[in-house]
Image (cartoon, rainbow, N blue to C red; front, side, top):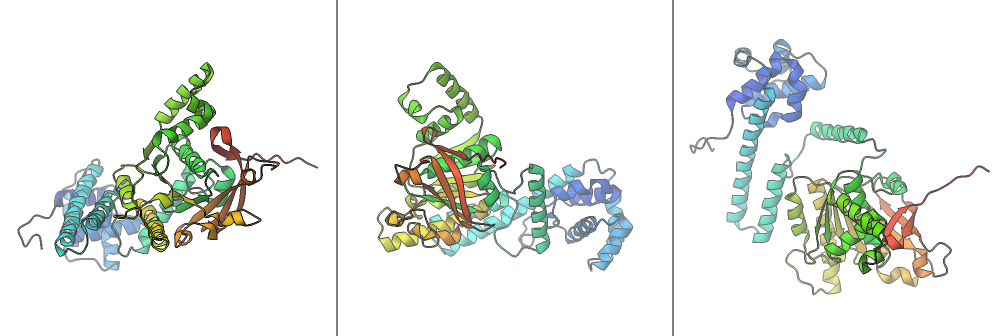
Length: 447
């Protein structure tokens, strides 16, 4: 259509031919090319079919040369009468395969321009059809542009062959990481063994009554991911200011009690520890937004603009607003709004392809029971929260309710839901002076 209207569709015939010619001249370059290009990035159909055939042959370990490729094209039903002469032309215009990645980069660039044009047309249609409000249209437009930046399409049916390849890529990545689980480590070994780390596309809910330490455990995980794993972490704090959060992180990294940091009563050695901790924290890639009126769309938009993102932490769900809403709610509308927000958070985790940790308040229901350990039904305005979340964990400290407790700093992380495996209770050690958690060391003695 664009060509009929006199528009030139972005593509480079010489670059496409040079890529294919290089693959036919020197099969050793094929693995590198397949890492950088996909068949649908070729504009010319014959080029696309030939590349797809070579990709198929490589996947099955078949010998790749002009004769075998032509034979496979016949078998796959994509052979054309001019294929032999065209293949000879490809090899004649490509004297060497040395620059094949440069040719591939040109093909990718033109393919991206074509997709950008298609996306612009879709956005135009949305605008002029007037099918939604400006905020909704802007959100949809940002999603489409973000998907382009990530090299994928929004929606649509995906061939299972692509999904299988993505699964293998994830398996290889997990194997190369050296971890015994696929996700980002939380820094709490027993917890990692149960939930297999923080995994992409997962919505992880941490629920507790006020004062139990849900912000602290989330910061534990964020800090470990950034400091020990080199991950980029986005923290959206709707309750605490960014200075308060950083003070807590400094306390944990420096092992200086947070009370000393708040009062400024610090010894020389503590000053040195804090200075060292500040340098360590500054070297991490943690981003903090403490705007209390953020919506999921606001967070999603900010995350899309980051070139690299590995983990999102949100503190906490009940303080969030639906897009375009105010603060006055009836109980019924608030329950629906929180359900909508939880659904949007799950969609956000899938779209950004990162784990999203969201904190949530528990209702007072547990305080009227003899056993005050949290249950799924204790989630405030639960609605669809427990349905949307992949992992739900609740915090409980007996010392919070029972001042005569034998182990006032023993905490329980109760896994109430776990799509990947077992539920159960994991013991943690609460360190009140550092507002932090750590794994309980178990020592087994032979009888």
